[in-house]
Image (spheres, rainbow, N blue to C red):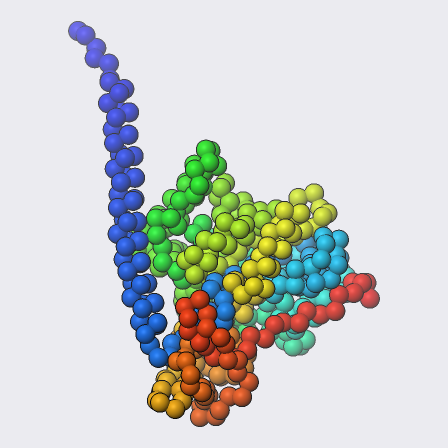
Length: 472
């Protein structure tokens, strides 16, 4: 009896056919999606162009927005923290050269894990707490990176909240950290902070304290959220192995989106469905928060570029051009304190990339601000209730309030309205009334790239604390 060998070519042909079919389906879906997104955007832009008054996407004159959202991991001393922030927030001469003077924030822990004494609120160095307190009050530290790995019980979490409240420190953004037990949402089994009855449960006191926005781990390799997604969103320049790895990571982001679109992973990847920057997440105890998505474009995968050196790639000129092209909003995932062998604490290539980003900000192309300010502007703009009347003599814009999906009606004050910009008809005076009261402190802007004139509430830059010897 003759034994028949299997034809290996058949298996290879089947694999190749499957790969070609998958690739064909991939690009067909993208092509349809791209056409729909492009058409929808064209109609939306055309409608805005012809409306007498419209709400501009970004504060005048910007065409995109970016935040660098840094987890505090591996920032070991107050000297390191201050050195990094001085370069980011001021135009002082520093060891890295002249500072870039950007609104770039940072985060902090309350409690470090046993055996370590990194830069935390409850460290053995009293100056740590003083510095963190000053930067929170200035709005520069705006994120709590969990309570830290040293916090594993509800008693510790409540003690941390009370300490912040006593010092008048309100921190509006929460970022999960690695496998910290205080993490919220069911992304990982170790997350216990929002599980009713768990010894580490704390979200019933943490969320009401001040937390409005939460990063549970949503991340993407797509540049520009709240923007149409096209086939270009998932491709990279053809550069051999590096491109193949990047395509692999882009495919992961794409399939996250497909999974959420068809309800296969509606909970974890829901932000990918619409390439959204922000969405509403229901925590395990039923409380609702805004979750936001960050990006990392490293070719090895998300997380590999989230350090001082990788930041240069994530804010490279090609990335910024793409952000401007799609008129998107981006929050960069990074760890400014992860700097390899130590000093220089800011990688030289990243310092150059930050200088280039500063040029885009100074010349009015990309708004660069802290994580909270960017998230707050985005949610306020969506929730703003307004009407406009234009006749032959003047244009009147009436702001009736801000109806937040989670908080309900929130105050339409200077902080919440900063940056809000309306495009208006030429040649007429403009009045803006908030709850019937005329606003005096407004900016009248010349035509932007669309040729439309606009009126805006001033964007108020944060003023960092004085930089001094951390020992004093």
